[in-house]
Image 1 (tube, rainbow, N blue to C red):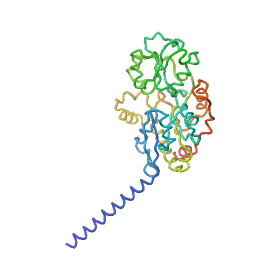
Image 2 (cartoon, rainbow, N blue to C red):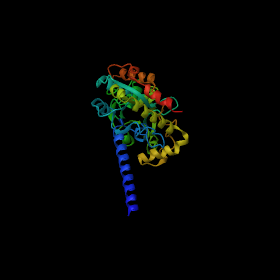
Image 3 (cartoon, rainbow, N blue to C red):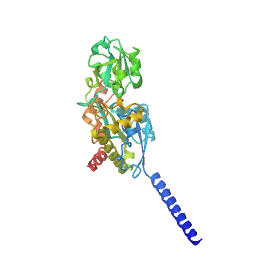
Image 4 (cartoon, helix red, strand yellow):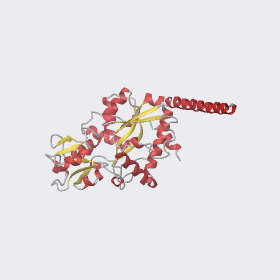
Length: 341
């Protein structure tokens, strides 16, 4: 009996210790800064699959916690950022100006890059017509119907810019309808639009390639347009600078893992599992030159961004174009990239 009592006491002591450790760990985790970040579309945006590669999240659960929140469009992210319900908004050249000028978020800062459209040697969004369409050049779109995902969206401005360079203006020379990216093929096949926006990952789907041919791409309007980057407000940055730097270190490590050809098969498996589609849908283009361009250090191209914003103003989508470099804080991402050898 004494031996049983001794064993029982030891077991109870061990159990109590485990409970104490668990309680402490839970309390510690609850005290970590929680970074709430918005995203719209994968795999261009890596937010939804950021922690799937093995070994990239060195700091998650140690110095910060993470919540990825899906949005249908950038304006919804701006609203949530303004109300304090979102910590990082993933915006593009067309929406960052709305946040600064319309939402009056003068304290907004660009803290890291995600991907660019049309960088030299990389994918540029296509604007496609039916394979048998009589439309052979941009001027042939006069009096026709074109489809975009949203009026004022980044790719819509790229499309409008390309048409404007050939003397065609919306409402005067052609009509624009809004269609989700996933439904572009159906709208084109049904001839409800003469030209559709054909972007990743839909542009490479066999069903789309069977009926469509590109008339022009986004480089007709602007070169190397930043379509997505991380933004946060200065108050949040100053309060959570250390945690954000650790998160950005994990993010840079994620970018490099996905872009490494040695990880291509595993990367394709992650994305195909996320979309619940066969790996063959992604294998030939994902994280290659047929994909968006991603800077390995997550550093934005501000000259390209400024040129696109100026073009947005010239097309009449915004009244003025802010000096975008004044709305940047790259100190954290530069430190994060420097840590990785």
